[in-house]
Length: 231
Image (tube, rainbow, N blue to C red; front, side, top):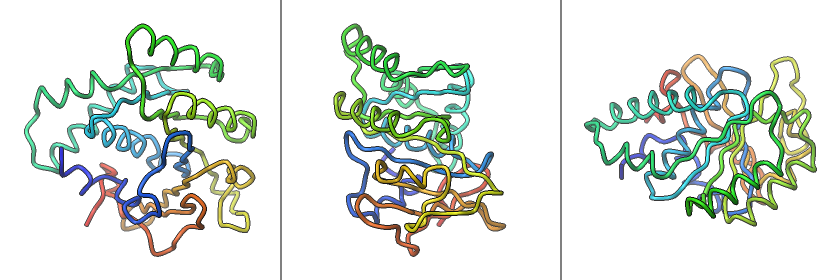
């Protein structure tokens, strides 16, 4: 999948200061409901997997079966975009290098996550390079949760990507252009990417790039159906 980056939403990070997130750091994809946060997180996951890295996908809203089905849809879209045949090796790589954990009905806690990470490391020798957390409620999570996640990422040597839900009726941003509900937490976030729906497609905009403010000239246009990068 060497051509994956040509259609990956992560193309936006090719122009960032460090070209990536880094272990112990938090990155956030923020958008309104239904714009494509989960799809973009799965594209991040597939990028990591096809680079030979290990990944844990944490879902707070959907069970493992539904998450797996979503991966399959995006996997086939990716094969079609790259004009590649389905290959058992690709499927095996996904199965070997990805774990899905679900914490439904507001059951997500840092202690539970860390216990599961330790069990996976000790029993299965599975140590993730990246952890994806989809569905965290930033309006309730607070600073303690994010600080805890950063410590967990550092302890396990993983970077952590999260999704955040913004709202159409709340348009205020902080002085750095970061929108609600992460405006008061962005000092804990290394990368912030906003998904913006427009009539011609969905655009990714880099709002924060580590210690730098976002560059308005850095954006990637996504196909609104597959959320793959368009030329």
